[in-house]
Length: 198
Image (cartoon, rainbow, N blue to C red; front, side, top):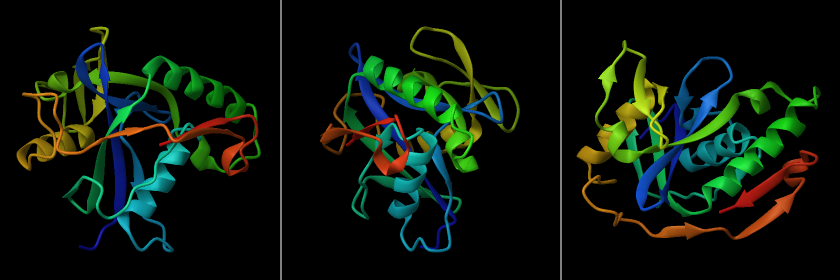
């Protein structure tokens, strides 16, 4: 199918609870999936998604997706879901480290400054939300604090539930858990950053 963009939602188990990792937009007070518009040279959704994840995670995550990766197609976008075996505290600390170095470097292109925070939200909380307006929902994060969630996240999750890509009733997902392959410094020529390759 013709696509206009792609995005990514990593799922982790945090203290026995299935959670989705989201990133806070630098432009709006909302938490979002990692994703964006397709570039002209990109022929496949996973190419767009791989690039967007690297950029919007501030070089923290490098995922290697392909056409067989679990995904949904909704409104012109492919959204990929993966279950990761990763320590959230280490992931967050790596992201914060990269945020500091990237924001101290004013010579990078704009796409390296699109997010400013990371948080995790229990999957069950994302399926039981109060509508604020057509673009933003309120949802409790893992610590029970309400945060603003971008509408696209909710649409993708609901569509993935309908299509049995993810489930809130059990912790067995229809795809394998991916482990960390290696950790690299200065990946993609972004100095002083640390990248977790999944």
